[in-house]
Amino acid sequence: MRMDYKTVKLQSESEIVINKSRFITSVKRTETEQEALDFIREIKSAHPAANHNCSAYLIGEHDSIQKANDDGEPSGTAGFPMLEVLKKQGLKDTTVVVTRYFGGIKLGGGGLIRAYGRSTSEGVAAAGTVERRLHSTMCVTVDYTALGKVENEVRQSAWPLEHIEYGEHVSLFILVPISEVESFHTWVADLTNGQGTVTEGEQKFLEFSV
Image (cartoon, rainbow, N blue to C red):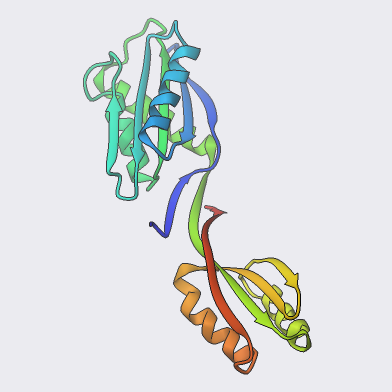
């Protein structure tokens, strides 16, 4: 499983006009190729009168699935420059569709490449980007006498305290980046003089704006 990666935050739609042609950019996070294809079909259905619905997507940890479609524009002038923008921005699991309504003025090959590249860049900016970081849920179990000290230190740390369970002992559930799990064990041992028990639970991604 991947540990950290960058992707778009929200599904979004933005629009620019270049030489009377409308370029409407739709962006969405897609974690499977089927989700990407469904999104492309959805946008095409929403714009049946458009001249072109060009698309590009990257799926998988190592971009194992990546496709670009010019949808009738001259070969290499739409889908490929869109895909290149996604790659240069380091995005994963992202699909972009640029819908063009032709305004009567031809842009030429270079003009189309710039237009589709710019549309994609502005579409990604409108969606916003996040870094997804894999965390492990760490359960720290201590006696009630140690709760105040441990809870205070955890809340002052960079690790999110998810919740606390009260029973015969107290268990604090803390989200720790995978890369910091080993040092977390050491930190708890020092904090509790070896009296605290640490167990690792489920892993989950947290999102951070970038």
